Amino acid sequence: MSNVQTFVEVEKQTNSKRKQVGILGGTFNPVHMAHLIMADQVGTSLGLEKVYLMPSNEPPHVDHKETIDATHRLKMLELAIEDNPLLAIEKNELEREGKSYTYETMKVLTEKYPDTDFYFIIGGDMVDYLPTWYKIDELTQLVQFVGVKRPGFSTESSYPIIWIDVPDMNISSTDLRKKITQGCSVNYLLPKNVLHYIQEKGLYLDEK
Image (cartoon, rainbow, N blue to C red):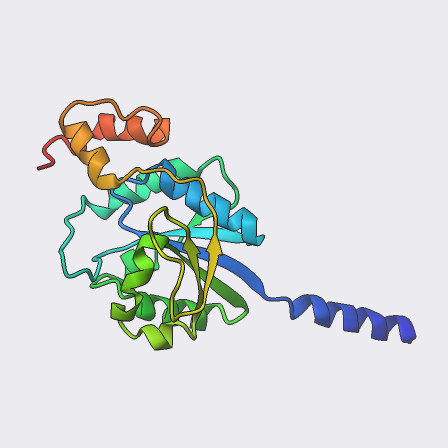
C-alpha cells in the first residue's frame, strides 16, 4: 500500500512541473543568423524546453512594414531550424490573421497552454518601446520578458526583465533584402538552405 502512495505522490509531482518555453517574434523577412543565435543562446542559457520563432501576420508598428507572402517566410523558418531540436515555429499570429498584437497572442497561448511559463524574447533596443506596447501592463502578467543585451542600449527598465548576453551580430533583414536586390553577397549572414530558397524563388529582387 505504501508503494502505491509513493507512486501517486511522485506522479503528482511530475505532472505539476510547468513547462518553460521561449517566444521570439518578428516578421522574419527573411530569417537570418542573428535571429537563430538569439533564440538558441537564450534557450540554452535559461534551460528552456523549446524556443518558438513566431512570424507575425501584420506587425502593429506605427511605421508599416511590407512583408512577402507568409508562406515564403514560414518555409524559410522551417528550413532554418530543421537541424536544431531546441527551436520550433509558433503559427498563431499567421493563423489568427489581422494585426499581431503580442498581448492578444499571448492571451490565447497562455489559455491554450495553462501548464506553460512563457519567456518573451526581445532585443535590448526594443526595451525603451515597451511602454508603447498594447496592454503592456496586462502583458507583463502573462509573460516573463527576456532582454538580449545590445551595445549602446541601457539595461534599465521599469518592467521586470531577465537580461541575457548574446554574441552581438549586426545583421538586419532590411539590409539583407537590399543586398540581395543589389546582387551583393549574403553568404554566412543567413542559413545556406534559406539562401538557396530565396534564389530558387527569386525573392527580394525588386526590394526598394
